[in-house]
Image (cartoon, rainbow, N blue to C red; front, side, top):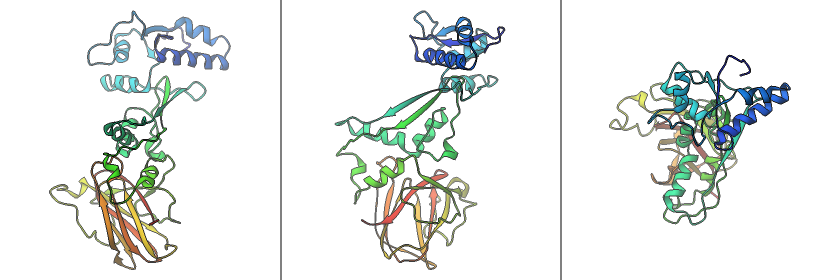
Length: 325
């Protein structure tokens, strides 16, 4: 950026937060080398975000256009804007700022008391695995995903993070309130950022206190202790590579009793003990509760458990398991 021959594009500070973030980068650079702030401030071309800035071309990224036209050689912009520009101009490159220069912004999410059911459902979708993957796809941090899946692409300007500050909201007509038993604890576990992730086929050392996330395999490659009691429907999954599945092994349970297993996504679940399918004593499921699909209760004894799922659309599924309270 200090090279006099390089045209540095920014947005307009005090008129657009992107410009303010760029100036914060300059201030950080000043701490590393005296005189850098003045050099960058004087050479920065404030090309967007101001009252007299040209409008973005319809349906296209203004940042990509400015680079393509030669108005700037590099542009400090949001990660989402950088990704959009690169999709339209594949030759353009995205370069991460080093930690010493990176500027971050945390965005909060809450639902107001008395909000409508769609508002609550939208918030739950954002916190679901699919919603978090959408954020990650567009360059945001996705803290509710496992770290291996949520590594964020940083833009040449800022690190944007979505922090789940989920406030109290009870919506009577939300499908999440209509399960046969309360799943409030499970819903909270599914959106917690500290979920433990395991690959299909692994053995857990202990029963997880919160939700566990299983990285699944394509159906044709998935291995099971015993064949799933119900095969994925051929009308929904005509080819085995279209669905995902897998199993994990759990240690011996502390005591016999009724245990509850809750799934974040649609799937068939088998629980196996002593070489036999465990007996279900109840189940409840809904398709109108974002982030939670169904919950099953089974009569289990104090022996090791094999938990296997099949017919899953995505390659990840979150699960909770524990004795019925």
